[in-house]
Length: 449
Image (cartoon, rainbow, N blue to C red; front, side):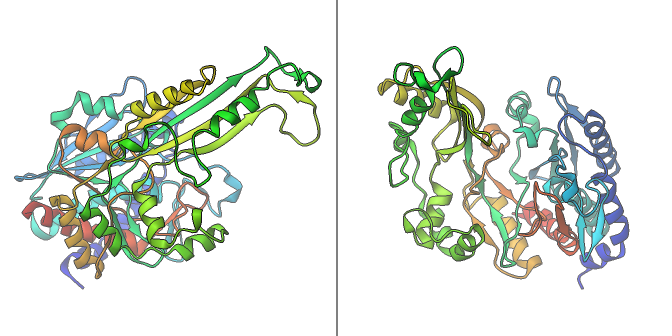
């Protein structure tokens, strides 16, 4: 056992009690008391490790908490969030969602994996580092927001308001952890997103379906518009969109060739016989990580309840999400989509932008990426799996490239069975304490890089 592991083991019960206290706040969107309680508790925790926390106000929503600790030539931004998903459905939890419960070496509570475990592990690592080595050798900037689970609507404005405060030599993002084969996994970026609604209207009210020969049906109108967005091979056909997609670099392609992607495991878990177009694992991985998407998330029109009702609907609505890769931006997608529909005569189909984020990919040779890889090898005992990007989306761009920080990396306490966003969300306790050891090693490694 290393000195770091000895320090963590001796303090295990206190660290666990600390985490349980943080998890006790129901910091869900709309729960003002729960969000305020978590924010105030976090401020006290950061103050205890020598920070002087301040609130970066969002103009009505939960404030972001900011604090700096340590010193050194290199600055490191730590991004996490203290808000969590709702716990519903409550009846599917084996224990109370906001009372941390240990069973079989796992800690169950809403927010354990997403994202209070990541947040507190970084603070605990500061404490452990100081006991082992003295003052932290890196200028560590904590930024913990309270709106991630509702799309971080105020994150980009905060980054624009405080660029000098938030700029660093590298960023630690939330996420990461063990994959299904117990390999520690890192991600160097995320996709962006443009989430929109398309709406078509017909008569001023629902009509009897007998009038279908003479009255327009907005459901047919909308489905015909949707049919122009993709071809039969699942390629996006929005005019000009694919021309803006930046191809992966050779460095990114080399990284993807090293990823042990298990397509059979995914297909089996999903109950599917094959990927789209019967792609092999190599092609599926490259497409998953480097290509944009255009996804119908939901359709609504007319009568869809049990039973029969002969109706000609007055309106039809579809929710679409576009996952964005470099160099696509939400604004560009909105403009191309509008022009595409107009060019085909669908000027009457309205586009309602819902939420948006710019995607980002870090240079895999960036110091923060290389330091995380080196520390993962030492602490986790094997070569980490490094993804050029995550298939999902997040507000990483605003706090990395948006403020001039050269790179970011996703690291966290997760594992494949953590049930993020689901009932019985959990982390494995051994993973939590080992992650603290990883962070201690990483702080040293990044400071010396």
